[in-house]
Image 1 (tube, rainbow, N blue to C red):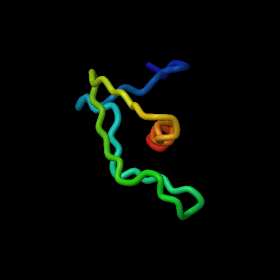
Image 2: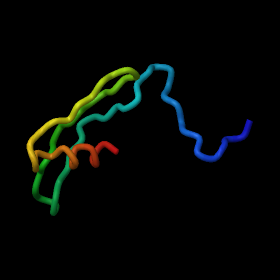
Image 3: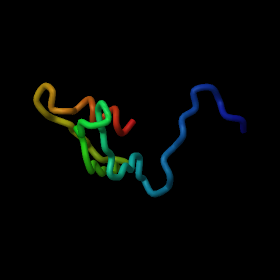
Image 4: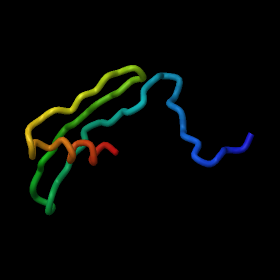
Amino acid sequence: MPDSAGAVETAPATGVLLDVNNVEVIYDEVILVLRGLSLQVKRGDLIALLGANGAGKSTTLKAIM
């Protein structure tokens, strides 16, 4: 059956939806703002990313997407 428009890829049989290792974010080639982020999200996990304004929540999400 051909792929339909708007089809999404399903997760592998392991149930792991997201797996990132040692993510870093550096601004202007010298300012390290995020180092060593590793995260594994499995099907059914509930995730919350909390912090004050400017704490890096959006930066973290952009880095892993």
